[in-house]
Length: 226
Image (tube, rainbow, N blue to C red; front, side, top):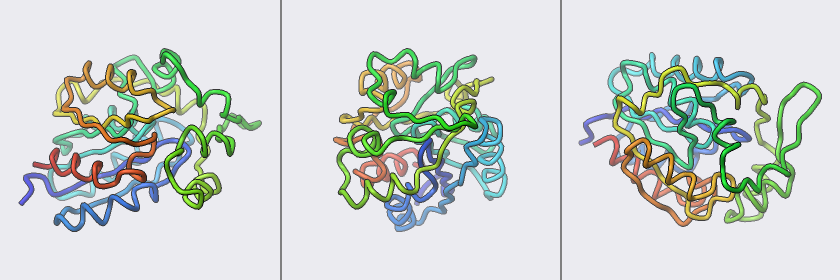
């Protein structure tokens, strides 16, 4: 039996809640109650609010999980009293005063940069090459095509949303590093995880570890749940 039975999953940019489709059945098979939040991706504040609403509906302690940009969201939303543990999957882990965008600008290499396509309203999408070669290079062609077609454009301002209080400073944290990640390089993930004093696991996966290696992701979440 798990010490924590409620899991709230938060997707990242250029994605939606279906990015957890392979992980949810694995967690449910362990008797866990799983909610995958659908982020609006139109502002950082709106994304944090959407996660907090989901947390409020849970009947007890929560393991809060964030992928990529979702890591920045759970860093703020994780201050909610019901959140008992945080899990980052290839995620941004800003400190107070930082954002996903400010961390991204510091990375040693950012091959995703040339593949980001802004529109007139300031929302960002990824090119086909960005999805196929950088974001999800280890998925099947059919899976990559689906990701490209269904990607959730994100407001550039959302990526610049600044954390007021980093929940990982007071809550237990876990971090899964995708060793083949081309969006957030492995070395930068390891630096963030070290700064957090997180329990670290690795997967031989691209940036979308929850689709490439769902068992590794589910296993780490289960460990965080106790």
